[in-house]
Image 1: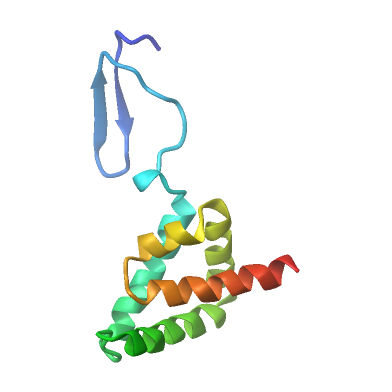
Image 2: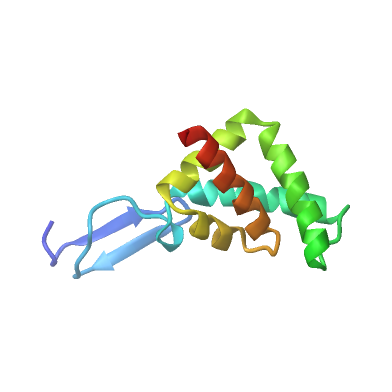
Length: 121
C-alpha cells in the first residue's frame, strides 16, 4: 500500500479513515496495552463496582476489604484467575493496576503477584 492510497480500518466501534499518510501494520490495543490485560481489568472493575455498593471504599481499610472480596471471587473462578495471570504476563502488574483505576487495585495486584510466584515455582 502506498502513502497515496485511501484506506479504511474497521475498529469495531467505527472506522478510521486515512488519506495519504503512514501506517504501521499490526495489532492495535487501547492505550498500547494487550487486549487480555484490558479485558481482565474491565472484569475486575465490574467486580469492584458491584462490591462497592455493599462495601463503601472510602478508606484504605475498606479498600482492603473490597480487594479481599475481589481476590476471593477471582480465586473461586479458575478461568478468570488464569485469564488475569496470563494478562499480567503479557502486560505488567503496574499496567493492570493502572487499568483497574481504583484504590483497591494495589491490594489486588499484590495478590496476583503472589499467584504468579506460586505458579512459577
